[in-house]
Length: 348
Image (cartoon, rainbow, N blue to C red; front, side, top):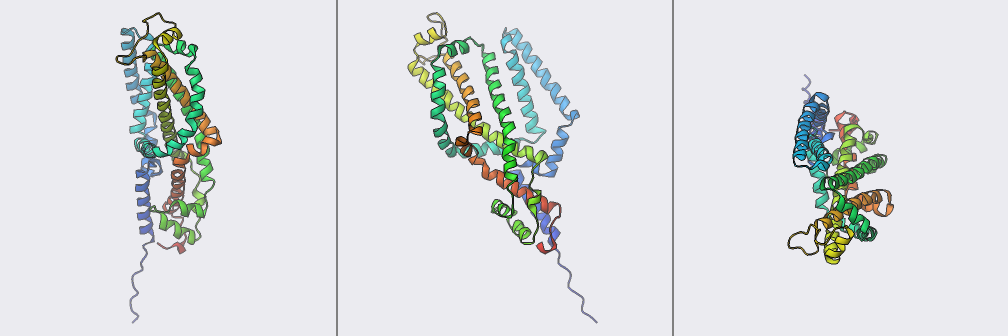
């Protein structure tokens, strides 16, 4: 009688499933939540009108109440800024909760503030020329007259407009960065980008077995928007930090060199007409207004320069290029394992 054969050991599907789960946990911890199918399905559900309409109605009621309060306080000029801010905050809240963007934004902000040392060389290269350019506007009487004549609500609306223009410009240019990375994927790229990740061993096995994860490297759909959102938050964070630096510089510079008489003359106000800040000589509300306007303008100017000028572009994206490449490489291998496109010679 022939001896019974030993039970066949086929850990391949089990091992692949475990590796896929590890990769999904890695995605969730690195701000790549849309890469996970369950989260992506929840986001797709959150974009349905029956989910969005109730939230839009609540935000509309809050905006109407804010407008009514502005009318009662006789601040009609602030109504556009109030409406824009209310709907903007409502959209951010819905994006953070129903669209699961909180993890993406928090990881991207942590990446920005965790690499502040990388901002120093970029700031040292960009700020001197930027400050020389903007300082000519700061010592211009027309700019002081314009900003001092703006009501606080209109000034804030102007800042929101400049920020929106910067975001729109980034949304046009950032997809090009994603396309540039996923077009460069090959076996060497995959081995390099997955090193030290849960997919390192699986990538080596797939490459040795002749699999082609690079065929799944093209990023599209929700995964593409996940990467764009990460890039957007990181770049906006850098721009805001630089704009805050410009704002602080002009506050200090103006308090040192702009006497009350000069500020009164440039804002076309009578003597004693400045809204001086307490305990701060030469500092006034008008100085804060012009500094805020020029800081917002500097942010837009730097955004355009940093993305279009090769001098700044490499440093501007240096802090996230490695993370972007790792995400694209991980996704290609993850999709290969998840879809079962693994040659038999690849083993478990």
